[in-house]
Amino acid sequence: MMKNSTLKKCALILLVAVLALLALTGCAKKDSGKGASEWYTAEIEANKGDYPYHALLDIDQDGVEELFLSTTEKANVAAEDAARLLAQVDGKTVTLKEIGGVAGETFRYDKAEKVLYYYFRLSGESHFTKYNLENGELKEILVVDRYSPHHGPEDSDNELNYANGDEIWADEAQELWDQYEAAAEITYSA
Image (cartoon, rainbow, N blue to C red; front, side):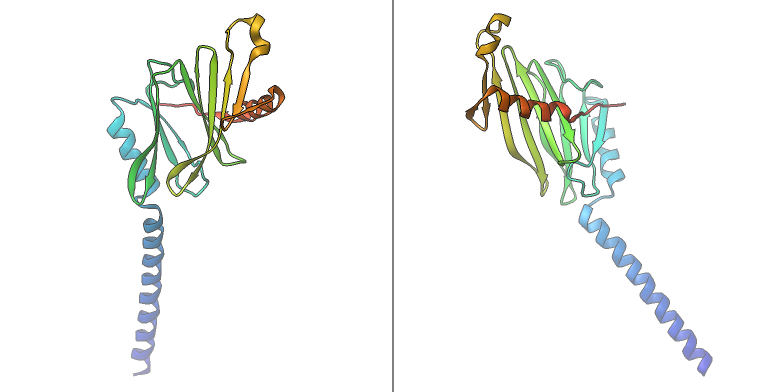
């Protein structure tokens, strides 16, 4: 009888351990939806015809990578190219940002600050926006604009600089542009 009781206790302990392991595995999947490799592998395959290049990056450092898709492997997305930033939110794939169609656009990333930069330029002007990724959304934290009204080298002192819509001095603008330039470009691979 004692042997049977010991077996029952061992079976119960084993059952509890298995259930605990299943619960932990279930919680991990619940938090991040599909496993990272499942969702982005499916998205890469589904979009391969339109976006043959991709990059993976965990912008907010939460353990789930975001997916960048691109029509080009170059970091600069020119007017004839396009790129999309996708994330998994509540188990669903959502598009956070689409770019393409202007003279040049780029994503950059600063891992230390956990911020994503989006840059675009047109003739005589350039802009970047600095974002945090929070709760599955890009949150704009800074917009910097630079305008060269006459586009010529002789007029380079006439640049106008803005941060979040307020005019700023050239040296303040340069500090912000230096931060942007120090961030790593997002590059894509097949």
